[in-house]
Amino acid sequence: MSCSVEEFMKFGLIAGNGKFPFLVVAGARKQGASLSVVAIREETDKRIETVAERVVWVGIGQLGKMISFFKNEGVSKAIMAGQVKHVQIFSGALPDLRMVKMLWNLPQRNTDALIGGVASEMEKEGIELIDSTYFIQDQLAPEGVLTRRKLDETECGNVEYGLRVAHEIARLDLGQTIVVRAKACVAVEAMEGTDAVIKRAGELAKGKLTVVKVAKPNQDMRFDVPVVGVPTIEQMIKAGATCLCLTARKTLIFDREEMLELANRHKISIVAASGETISNNLA
Image 1 (tube, helix red, strand yellow):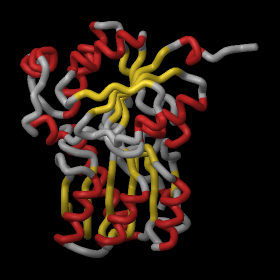
Image 2: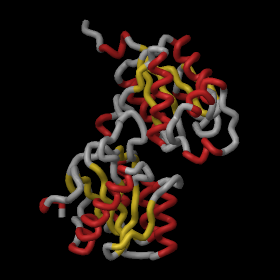
Image 3: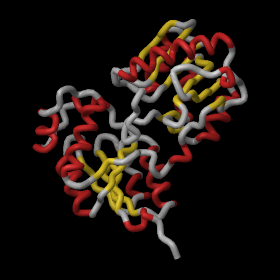
Image 4: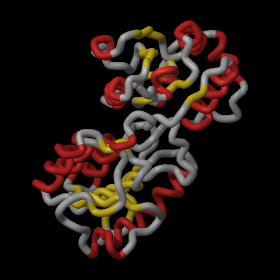
């Protein structure tokens, strides 16, 4: 009887908000992997305790406690899944000494720097932060048109323009999503998240909107991987958006069948592109 590598290895999960952590737990269980979970008090859904075997709750700034738990559990590889709102860093939460030292040494405090700092501290203790999609590769967006309706000529123009702008914004680590109308940028994501920026765009220029959500040019799949799902489409419907463009193979789609069915019902086109332009077969 053969055994997978996962059966001999203990994995850790740093669980943020949303469905992502639950999907990782389910994926790990399906592959027979042992998973110890650090739940973030300010973010993680309390139901994580009903699906995970071992859970410890920590505050947003308790880096030392998180690392100690993983070491005691014998964790050698850890996954970060689920959003931790950037504003939490500035919410007045009291960091422990290890977090204070890490923050003090950071040249800046954007997403990459903050999570990269956490990863470095973990690596000092022999804990490797790995690809957050490790157990759920099947939920990454394939390249192509994912809905029944393809893009029309106006949407193609919006996407081409939007991809250029969105990749630049992502390169600067400001956000992953922009909303375009008539080849003009209506709204840009900062700390508020995708659904919030779509809502804001709808308030500014409702109707005929195109949403472009991209991975960073050199996306680190260990963290901040783009995610879309049913709530994304629901917010697009409210805002009057007709098209969604994603980065293929680097964007997670949660509840794919339900999301695509909702998009098809409202004649929303969804396309996943692999670069900064869309090829003719995607339009």
